[in-house]
Image (cartoon, rainbow, N blue to C red; front, top):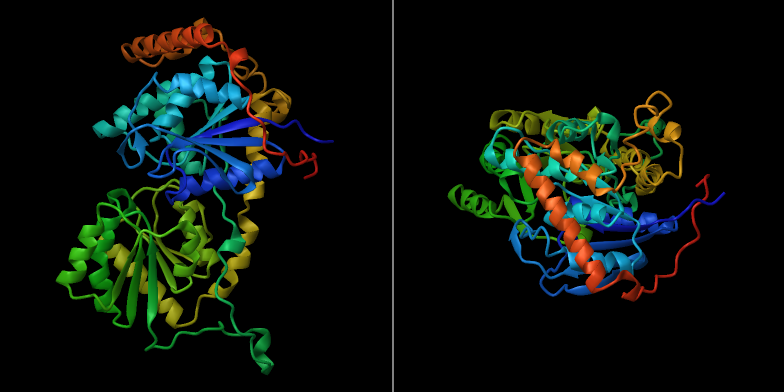
Length: 476
């Protein structure tokens, strides 16, 4: 039996041509949902020469809206001025579900608010971890509570991320699902290795490329060079690692404000022949960089998932990473060496990884097939589709929430769009904040009423759809 298909809008500030985990997640999820018969569009801001409407592989239609960027690719908060354009796109494309991504995305937060005002189902995927103590985190979490007070369902990429989001937005845990990131394993294959020899012990061969004590070992880093990615930690650790292990070199790919610190460290320690900085790289070139290395170093200070370490393991690299956030959930222990987010421990963990590789104790040539079996975008799309079916009422409450919890969700599951009910949900966000949020919702509703009068929906042309693929069956 074929399943119902949906018209879905993915909304986020972070999308191609900018490289990154969120960007890759949105694109891969969109293409796999299209493979299952759904219609998916992406709404993001303009990127230099990327303006207007673009079509990507598999018929992914991308709207690049002209809004100013203020910080790390996030647009300036407009709150209401995005609404008329957003409404026009929703009507033209006959969108049923608005799926926003990333806490730090202004477009995402505004789209969820406007989508609910228009009577659309909404889903939010959180890709990051945010603290609770500093002023920026407190402000961010308050805004997230505002947005998620009236969302149908929330998806997190790790169980640690789920705990963080539930606490930050004061959500019922039953309202949050965990669906991890994945990768296209065929795009991250290791270099081909020679066949093992036909000696009597070939049934248990040594790794195809054993490292000798004097062979050069390459450590790869592919990351945005920001504070939260541990660039300061990396800058402090590299000279010590190279001092302890002379036959080692680094390849660093990525850009960001902390790149200048790395360059200064290289010059001060005269490491130009030991550390190569490649600058920003396109995502399709990441595999070509990774296969040059033996170890992937990931010194992040906070991370909800860490797709790049999955890509590194798939390329056959031994992973050294900090045990923060959701990273310990991502890969099994035989593929990783964990370190505390401290300089001394990161240096020690890297030393252990180097020693293990030189002693041929790690079978990295097996990593690719193991990762391929663990992570699949097709599986992510199926699980996301199930969320869409649940919030749209196409599967029973017992099936979506579980038999034991169905009665608990009998009222809140089908969150209605009546203005008075929405205001009740927002009013509970705080003594002062609740009143402010209610005012924002009322203004948003009045703008919607004005737009419906000024430019009725039935006068907006409907866009022609890209030819759809046959809907996936229940067995697919």
